[in-house]
Length: 110
Length: 113
Image 1 (tube, rainbow over the protein chains, first blue to last red):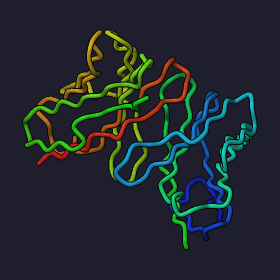
Image 2 (cartoon, rainbow over the protein chains, first blue to last red):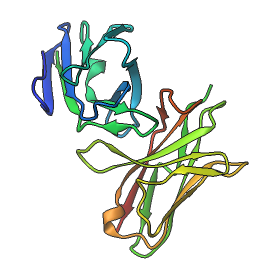
Image 3 (tube, rainbow over the protein chains, first blue to last red):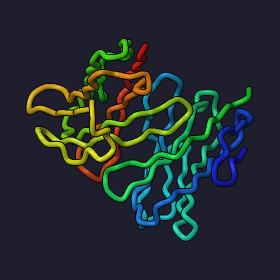
């Protein structure tokens, strides 16, 4: 499943499929980007980060891609699991003030 | 290694009362940030503190809100004379340095009745 466009608030994905969550950031001066996962009633949980001198970074089951030309960030989750159901936020900064997008709610179907 | 701790987790206040929110950063972290989250929205930056110093409070309302991070003890976000519009989730984050990943606590959910 994939979210497209500036902002798609929900994404439904079949368990086992790959998920792609997209984010358009606003500040061309931003040089540090983070993806967070937030489950209901909890604080944002750090997933993966990337600096502007990179265009791809991989973690465990997750990959972040950065396209500075079009100010676009994406998070790919491989083999999506029920525990991946949450709201996902991208955050950008050029110093310490994180600016968060509105978030994408991911629902994993069994 | 304990994560960022916040208390209370839930706080109910009547209009006009004071709310005090506490945050203990992760061990070894000396940078603390407070964010506010309204329902269905992303987090909004409020204030950035280091020990005994407010570095940036540009996101915090000028009136009724204050924050501190004393030499000893937790960081405190204080809201005086609360109004219904202050109802939100308040999150604290900490980091070991200024341009590092910020780790968030579980938040304090403030309800003003």
